[in-house]
Structure formats: C-alpha cells, structure tokens
Amino acid sequence: MTAPRPQPPIAMLAELTHRCPLSCPYCSNPLELARQEQELDTETWARVFDEAAGIGVLQLHLSGGEPASRRDLVELVSAARQAGLYTNLITSGIGLTQKRLQALDDAGLDHIQLSLQGTNAEIADEIGGYRGGFARKMQVAQWIGEIGFPLTLNAVLHRRNLHQLPRALEMALEMGARRIEVATVQFHGWALKNRAALMPSRDQARDATRQVAEARLRLKGQLVIDYVPADYHEDYPKRCMGGWGTSGLNITPEGRVLPCHAAESIPHLDFETVRRASLHEIWYESAAFNAYRGTDWMAEPCVSCERKTVDFGGCRCQALALAGDANATDPVCVKSPHHKALQAAAEAFAASTEDTLTYRQMIKAPV
Amino acid sequence: MDAADIPALPRGVRLHYDKIRQAWVLLAPERAVMLDQVGHAVLSEVDGCRSFGEITTALAEKYNAPAEQIAEDSAGFLGALRNRRFLDLRS
Image 1 (tube, chains in turn blue, brown):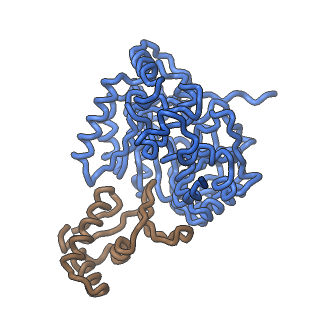
Image 2 (tube, helix red, strand yellow; image 1 turned 90 degrees about the vertical axis):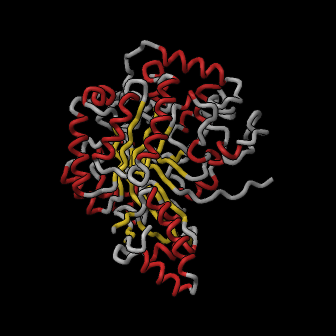
Image 3 (cartoon, chains in turn purple, brown; image 1 turned 135 degrees about the vertical axis):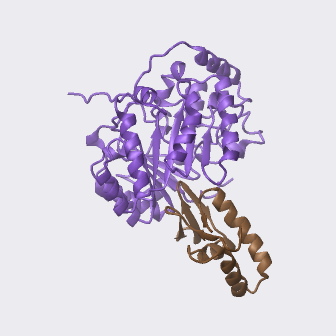
C-alpha cells in the first residue's frame, strides 16, 4: 500500500537558541544543550523562514531557550514577516526592554506568549532559578499591554504551584491576555529528572481539570483556555504534535529538523539539517519524518484499536522513555501493558517528599 | 448578535491567502482557521466600521440570497469566532 502524500505543515517551532537566563527544572530542551557558536546565523534562519513559507507553514513560533537572548531577534522577526509568516514570540520576558519591544512591534511581531513559572516571586523565582525574574516579567507584561501586542499567558503547572491556578487565571485577565495555556508539566528531558519533585497528585490533577472546565464557562468570550492535563494520570495518551509529521516541525538552534522537540531522544533516528537539505525534502522525503507517519508502523494493541487515528498511539518519545520501545503504545494508554506500572509510579512520585530541584544547566564546552 | 453590533478583527487576527493550499485562512494567535467560500465572503465584509446588519444586507444583495438566512448563518460563524477571541464586537 502506498502511503498518501503528507499534507503541508502548518506550524514551525524555531528554537533560536538554547541559551536562557532561567533554568527551569522542566525545560523542554534536550539534556545536551547547543552552545552559542553552534547556532544558525541570521541569514540562515531567514532562508529557513522563506523555505517554511514555501512549503505551507503559516505559523512561526520563535522559541528557545530564551529567544530574547539572540541579539538579532528583531531582524529575525522582520525576516519572518517578510516571508509571510504569522510570527509568535515565546518568551519568559527576561531580556526584553521597552525599547526592544517597540522595535519588535515595528518589525511586525504578531503575538507574544509569556511564560509564567508561578504567580508570586517566591515560587516563580525558585522554579526559574533566577532571582528578580518574576518582578522583571511583570514589568514586561505591562509594556506588552501598553504596546497592545496580543498576549497569551502560558502557566506551567506541577505539584509545587498547581494551587496557584486560580490566581494565574486572574493574572491573565489583569494583563489583558486573550488566551491562557494551562500546561501541566510533561515529563520529557529535564522534567524526567524531576518527576519526584514535580509530579502532581491525582487529586490535584482532577481538581485542575474541574477548575479549567468551570473557568471556561465563566470566562467564555473573554479568556480562551487551552489545557494540557497531567499526562500520567490520564487513561488515553495525547495526540502528540497532532500526529507525527502531520502538521508541525521543529528546528533546533544548530538547524536539525525534528518532528517534535523531544525527537532527538529517539537514538535510532537520523535528523537532517537545514545546512544540507531543504525543508521540502526533509518534510516529504526524510526517513525520520516518515518513521511514524500514519499507522503502518504500529504494533498491537494500537493496530486493532479504534482510537489509532485519534491519538496515533500517543507520544513516540514517551513510549521509548517509559516502555523502552519507540514503536510501542504510549504507556499512558490504558491498553498498554505498562499502564498500571506507570500509574503506580506516578502515585509514588506524587507522594514523594523530594523537594530538591535538578535545574537545567548547560554543560561547559570542552577546553 | 444584534444588527447594530459592529464586528472587527482585533490586532493579531488577519485574513491571509495561502498560496500553497490555494485557500483563504484566518490567522490568529497560534491558530490558523481554514475558511470556506462563505466564511471568506463574510469576513471580507468585516471592516470595523459597518454594522452586522449592514454587512448581512450587503451580502444578501451580492449573493442574491434571503437576508434572514444570511444573518443567521453569519451570526453563528462570527459568534464562534468571537468566543475564540478572534473577533471583537462594538456596539
């Protein structure tokens, strides 16, 4: 059977840099972080933005690390807008001054997504590992409002700050945000090292789900709430990235092109780089993008499951990390033979008294 | 939605012709809404000046269709956009 030709991608996440003033213990960057001298230069990113628009990408997410750590951020936004892309800046706010925000406005930046590590300085600065970060972020939020950028607040929640969800919703309204993402930490990369300190309890997870449902009704037409529930306490896995190689792609600071930000954790996949191949070739022809497209790669219980085109067996990286096989059913799924063990582990992590956080850190360059 | 309401696309929401898919899309924060011909026709009339009533009257004339039907369909479509914060209403 010949697989149908994939649809063009809609969204691209450009990880401009892995550098970041914060060191959140759940950072989604890989354990091995790229150094500044390995990063793509301005001209290469501009070419990649043109190529992305040329294969159908509509939404560009400028991320990191902290994208404001790139000195050429304003130039990159200009290049993205010239390419015709809708341009979204995903930032902690650290590194953005009023002047720089005005320059980003002039360059045509469409939207800002501001991360929230906690709703007060005590928790936010501890989680971000950066004293003064919360106060700085509040200042940046005010400037964003004054300029009038459309804003999404991205509250990252876990055992230590889930009780702050009501306040996070209030803050989104106070900042004039149109959207809030209520994102429970997903345990990949650095977060996997911090499961004992960050795993929410089942009750916390249920309570968050209830609060989100209630807030969606109460704030209808005022604040849109996107919700990422606590994965390990669910019975069905997430449709990761909307399905592997179906709607989005991710570029690392060095230019490797990935189907999702964690895909490099699957060691048998080889990822092409924008330095050697076009995005068109990579999206349509590369082995890595074709590896888990569609359903042909699946084994049981996915093959005969009625949900196989709903969630595509869940997350491939999580299947590898937790079941030892990237082709396996995501262990979050109730049909996975590893599901019971995962839920027991989640309960144990949630009940842990561990409170030491392993912060993300850059391994020093070899001398 | 009342006839006197004035719909407007807020900052960060815009119509875009997608050359690759050969279709109109509504670009919004972290979302892209693929538009059919009707959706594009309605949004093309939204200019932040004219009222909902004026827009549906114009559409009814342009497409030679019953104004009540146009108003009902447009209100449903625009109301859904408003709930997603992709559309503002001024009165």
